[in-house]
Image (tube, rainbow, N blue to C red; front, top):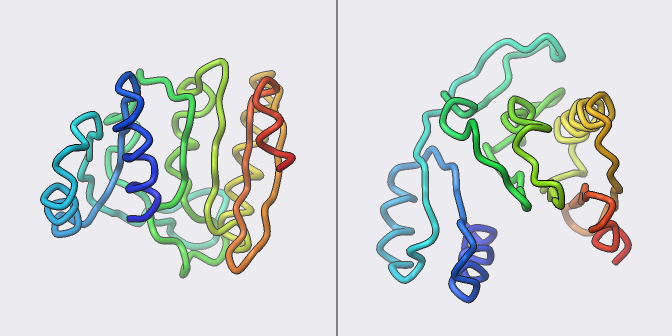
Length: 164
C-alpha cells in the first residue's frame, strides 16, 4: 500500500491527476478507504485474481480478471506495476499491463516496475519492450538497484527519469 499512498498523496496536491488503483483484496480496499478519505481523485478497482495459461510461460500466470476490459480506452502518463503479487511466479509475472500496451500510453509516459530483481518481472519487461518496439514507440530504461530493484521505462522526453 505504500506505492498507492505515495501516488495518492501526489494526486491530493495535483487535483487534475486521476489516480487509478487495481487491487484484489476487498479488506485492504475497505481499510484504505477508511484511512484515506481525502483522496477523492483516487479510484480503486477491485478485481479478482485468476491464474491462466500463457504461451510465454510453462506455468499458469496470476492476473486480474477482466483487467483489460476494466481499463480499456484509458490513457496513462504514469503506470506503476507493483501487483498482483508475483513472488511465486518464477517464469512470468505481472503481465496484466501487456494487454493494454501501447494503446494505453500517453505520448509522454513513465512506467515503474517494482521487484525487477525477479525473473518473472524481467521476463514481463522483455515482452513489454517487444510490444513497444513493434509499435515504434521510442523509450529509455533505467534500473535502480537496492534490496529490491526497480526499473523505469520512459518516453524519450522523460528519459531523464532513467538516469537518476
